Length: 396
Image (cartoon, rainbow, N blue to C red; front, side, top):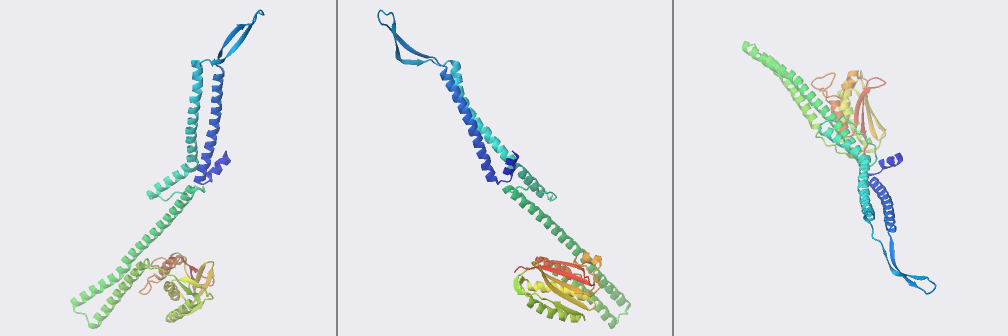
């Protein structure tokens, strides 16, 4: 019985329904045949219990003193008694009723077995799951391992719930980033505004005292202009972050060797501005599908960050790990502190915030990497200094 149950459990809904239907037909047929056989036996018994009557003519055959009996061809069965009629017709009606009962009860039992074995558990799981999703509760599990259609549906709902959980996490991260942006705006815009207000108060006071010289006025206006420029740069940085969500990744076949030759030329000019040395080591000549513009932007942001902390040297090395292009940017600077490793790719995080460094480079690079199906992570190099690694999926 357990083997049959296990076999039905792993069957598809259609096959299990056919299997149970065949079993129902066989069982109903067997019971019906037995019932018909018993009914026929009863009917035969009733008929055999009747009395047979016929006419007999007697004729003398002379002196012998004997009679000759002649049996008439016409004979007649006696009529059934009420008890016999009840038994006879009752067996026929009972047979018909029992066959109908077998069909109805067997159908109900077959349907009940099919429901309990194939439908009840997965439907309850799906019902509870949908109710939880409707209520916004994703803290539940779907455990149904059958390979039938409902099992596949449960698996699909399970994957959907996981995707909803992941989406929810991403939304919370986005909201957290938005809160960070808002807090940073309040903080970072507050400083130059306070500076400007201070200079305005200074000008007001100096004018009232008639101590304002042209030189002092020009210096004050220059300082106010610097504070205003900082505000403009900061606002532009926030706009750039908001635009990243709208960036469309345009994949195109590119030769890695050509990309890195062009990239090396641009980055070495950048390194000269920092009075640092840059070495690019690329031995890959694969053709890959990549968004060249955004790829350059990722590498440039990372290299600018590394040049800012390097003592003398920044190196770029490429390699292929399975189906990923791996690019490692190392510097010979002080490396990352534990706090840096945890927060380096967070929005507006920087060791040295100033007019030029708003703490956006690694954050933007991370977002652009993820848009191309890649990852960005930071660590300290075994030889000293910081190490920033990006992995982007090779799609060609």
